[in-house]
Structure formats: C-alpha cells, structure tokens
Length: 169
Length: 95
Image (cartoon, rainbow over all chains, first blue to last red; front, side, top):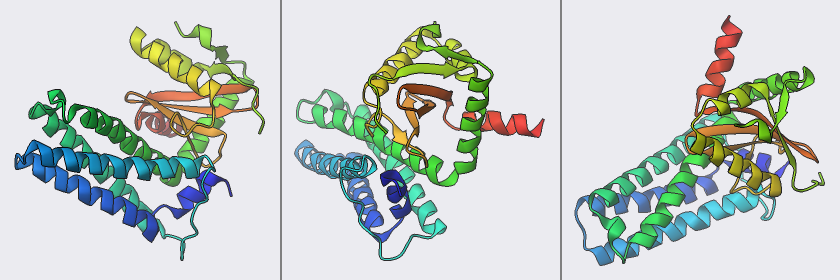
C-alpha cells in the first residue's frame, strides 16, 4: 500500500479525529475571542497556538503522504461513515479558519504589528486546510470520476491531442 | 519510480483549451505551478496524490489541475474550477 493510500485508509480513525477536533476546538475558541473583542495580547497568544498546532498537524500529514513518516496503524479500520464525518470536520475546520480571517480583516488586525505575521500564516494554513479537505474528498469519495478523467486524458493522448507547455498562450 | 528531473510538461487538448480561455495572470500562475511541480514532483505541499501515487492534483487559486507523472513527463489531464471537472464528465455521459 502506498503512503498516501495508508494515509487515506487511516483518515477518520480515532487518532486523526483527536488531532482534527482539537484543532477545531482551538480555532472555534479563537473565533469566539475575535467576536468578543478580546485583548490583542490574548489574541496573539491563541493565534500563535492555533498556527503551531495546525502547522504541526498538516506537516505530519504531508510527511506521511511523502512516505517520510510512518503512518500509525489504527486499532480498527475506519468505516465509510467515519471517513465522511472526518471530511466534514476538515471542511468545518476550513470554514472556521476562513471566519477567523474575515473577522481579523474586519477588525483590521492584519495591520497590527503584533498579529500581522500570524494572520498571514493562518491565511496560508487556511488554504492548506481547504486543499486537504478537497483532496480527501476527491481521493476517497470520487475515485470513479477521477479514473474517468485520466482515462479520457489517455485517450486524447493516444489520438495525438497532446501539446507542450509553450502552447499555453 | 526514478524521475528524470525536471519533467517535460505536456497537456492534453481539453485542459489546454480551458487554460487558454483564462486570463493571462492565471495562465502564468498555472505555468509557474506546473514548472515547480516538474522540478519536485512528489512534494506534497505542491501537489497531492490521488489513489495512484502518480496521478496527482494541485490547486491554483480556485482551479484544480489533475495530472499524471511518468519518469520523464508530467501530463496535465484536466483543469477546471473545483467540482466542475466531474460535472463536464457526467454531462458527456448523459448525452
């Protein structure tokens, strides 16, 4: 089994959920603080905490996908329902991160020297969360459609309908 | 698989026509991303594998690009906004 297939097979296990829901919890708390107009110093602390957690979590996922880190064996394989729930939770995490960024922009925290670097980092992590959620969904739930796309591309290539990069105008 | 880096980039007709219909800055961003991937094809921060490790996907803004790797070539199989790649296919199938 390839590293990415092992990651996909583990997605939705208790270990994944623990990491993901913990990140979701920290993100939701931060979102609440932004709404409550909490003091900037507290915001900076929690924003940094969230970024570190997400950076570590996503970094681990990337390393597992690249085969640089072993994928932990789950006690029992996750069911399709568990996997769908996990994908939903990752989309939810992406949604909360987007909300935090919007609130930060509304409160003009992007111009605040204490926070701006962390907000920029969160913007990158928000994109990565969306990308990972999209990837899991595509790799786990849309295998048939993905196969069709590559079959069609192969057919086009066989018919000679293939061009190099310079053909992009 | 041992790659001969950087990989040669090629596009099948469908994604090429779509990409050429986009605005110039987006086309440049797609080109830059493909060149980066061709130099480091298995970097998970640049592209993510699908069920087969050589069939991968990447994102450029709101666009999703699917491509396949061989030891010398990166072949772009499709490009489109999120979710629309499959809609195109199901429309064709229903005709």
